[in-house]
Length: 271
Length: 177
Image (cartoon, rainbow over all chains, first blue to last red; front, side, top):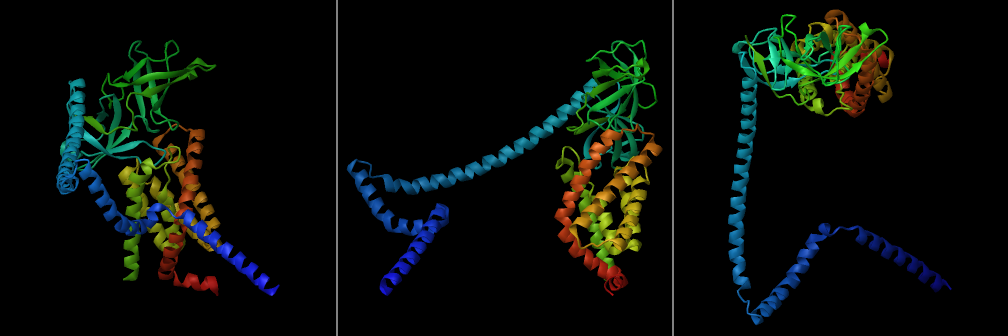
């Protein structure tokens, strides 16, 4: 009876141990036991190679093993060539991006031939959530001064509000403190567009004349009033017209032509 | 010597925060809203280093930011100084041991800073008042700052007590005796 009890206890223990071993083995990934695979490979592979050689010799393909060395050398050369090609590809990508930037500059200059302009990169965007100023990489050393208008190939960006010798701070048209006098390109109706907090590339147009007819899709450009922005620079298109009970309070939203989230290159009008 | 070294470290942390805010957090946003990690920094300095270090530091940080990215000089400097005052008030009345208290302090400070800055800008720049869009951005910023406080809390506490030991030895004595 006692012996039976002992045997059953041992059985339970052995079963538990086997269970634990099975669980552990089932959870081991193959990559964790590559050393075991290697050792086993050392044992098995020479025999397997011999057998393969024999099989190939019989089938007339006995050059299999002599070719391995050639293949290894070829592989080395190909790897070297591959890294050289990768390096060339990287260089080409850099040249391609430079080319794109230069093309943008050329497009910009062609578009605004009446103005003397200086190209610049955007080096920093506003760090706060409540404003939209940007910093560009040219300053007073390049002839940049306060109140100079800034444009991009799509349209108006803003104006310079402060300058250092190598950088300039630009208040964009979508900044909450920005106000621009603008006109509808077709009807020449004037209004005031100001930046809002709601959306990044949206302006709110107010002070719309009561007799003016504004339609969605109308193009808006600068009026030339105010002393900062020259006349005729594209601002954006009317996205929505909101009519109120009192017609004098009606307003429109303008979608800016410039995508401020992706703005990288600008031109500063210096004359 | 140790104090000077600590101040250099604090300036380095500020510069690190500046580059983080200008580069990393400009794309790592919550629904397009960035955090304001300078508020956490100013609050942290005033809480642990005291008003004597906190106020000058807050004003210097504020002026630096106003000059670098602001539209007018003084707004951030004034509001960061207010945060430093609030920080020293919190230090006298609340425990810094609790993560929850720290989170509430950051929530309060972020609200005070942003509302104060907005009100000042309304008067200084005559900007158009947009209460709902402002509140919509504010709650996201508060949430982001709170999450960052939870992440930064262990480092803040560790570094903070070292700074406190250096700058306010007497304050520690009054707290425990």
